[in-house]
Image (cartoon, rainbow, N blue to C red; front, side):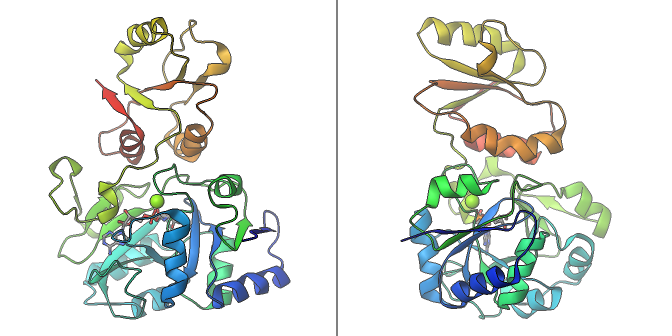
Amino acid sequence: MKTNIFNMKKTIDQHELAEITNLLQRGKTVAFPTETVYGLGADATNKEAVEKIFSAKGRPSDNPLIVHVATKSQLLSLVKDVPDYVERLIDKFSPGPITYVLHHAGKVAPVVTAGLDTIGVRIPNHPVALSILKASALPLAAPSANRSGRPSPTEADHVADDLTGRIAAIVDGGMTDVGIESTVVDCTGEIPLILRPGTITAENIKNAIGACHVYQTEDLPEKPKSPGMKYVHYAPEVPLFLVEKSKIAELIHDYQAQGNRVALLYASHSLQRIPAEQRLYIGTDEHELAKRLYRILRSFNKRDMDMIVCEYPSLSENHAIIDRLKRAATEIIM
Ligand code: TXA
Ligand code: MG
């Protein structure tokens, strides 16, 4: 399959927008930028179209997809039994990097929700995504546009690396702004429950509506609430070791003594024993780090490197960056 590239980095061309809309309405898959990461979109009401997403990504069919819509009324039309606080959350945070899990109203193909009675829905805050959603007037199922297990794509090139030849088109909107995926919030109960942390935090939600719980992955039951959380995620090509900073120097010494080529991601102090081009400062600005994280994880390959040692960032334990690094890591050494 030929994968068409549409460049919308600077302007959204109306003819191209019509072409993209046409592809989606004909049941094709199109990758497009959102404010978080690139999504691989298809018409959520079209079973065959949605199946193409699962096969292009190599995604297990029991992992439900997030449905993207342009407006609050479109969002509410897809769900039922909506608790009062949800509209307040939508008014406060959407469009934005937050996904609401609610009981669905049977409007999308059952493959989207992996047969669950709930659906994840969100309004992305990105001009290209919103233009496509408005022009097509479709709810678009769109998981992150990476091969399953790989770090999510934050640039069109990342999507091309993973999915060229497997999808109909990629819309290039430049580097995404937030860099990590939306906060997923289960809103089926009296108090919202964060299933996947993101840049909208439990604190933000508490401030908006008074209460919020956070799902603890440590007590992961047999059947996790958010099916996607049980899979390996964000794994870079080169194994990543997440290491508490006081242990880094000694560990690297040992790894190198065993003949390994080691790259270092550091926030506090660099190590002279690692060549400059293999050391990467990950900084202390959490927004910058979130934005660059997947690009960094994708920048190493097995040809040049045997392992990545990443300093454990000094952020709170339930910070989204810690969550993603832990999922990306082969080993956590504290
Ligand atoms: O920022 C984002 O959310 C990006 C952009 C493209 O919108 N999308 C994204 O989709 O990260 P994906 O498919 O990579 O992750 C969706 C997560 C998975 O962990 C999935 O299990 C969970 O949301 N999810 C989706 N529907 C759900 C549901 N009905 N109940 C519980 N979890 C759900
Ligand atoms: Mg994903």
